[in-house]
Image (cartoon, helix red, strand yellow):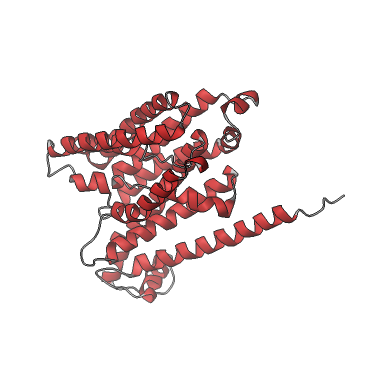
Length: 342
């Protein structure tokens, strides 16, 4: 016997499909623009010819198009996709765990902490050392956030403000580490504080992707548990969730993912805050849909922000973190003012 149709469920499903379809098409449009536009303009037809040549079709692309697209723009675009999706997924995980829409890995101090480790690591072993140092610092910062969480049981916004203060302090220490290191090896402080995708290489992309994929798979495996945590810690305990263990795992995994992204592109703020906030009306509160939708939305947001960073003041390239901050800062202040909703 078939169940009667539920108009509310059908409406939510239709909105989710249409919303994700629009976001997917927008992401494809941004990807095409990112590969074509820049200081050296390459027609979309040349981009198509380049990919056709790579997969064996009878197409021929110019050497200029090959070197610019394949050597510079494609790895940069893919890095934006990976980092944007990773930070958005981390934001969803933290917001579900803390039941607070203001939770963001960089606002909680994890990103600046990873920047310290990344600066130390890059002076020791290139990009691999930077990512390893960023992972270690991100995990340590995650445990600090966990300690703050225990002291903020009455007002969750106190945790966010404590994280912001922690992040400012850690950013200052990152500056000391960078200025005291070999400037020919360690990227400048602007990279660690404001982020940049300009130096992306295929090797850096592959190294970051390993950490990100493992972490995202773990978070995806906890999607049902995150749904239960939305009911409150007491209710989750009663339903069989080991809240302390899950919180520890999530903080370590988020620290590792953020450490990997910061080691590769520096600190890029507000992605983990903005994207889940924008995706909830589209996907609904279920973490199965929210995580997938936020990964897609994060990829679109950061790749679009990087495209804007390259074009707005061309030929000068802006740090991508400036672009995300211009959008995220006002939204964060607005959400902070709506304390009863967060």
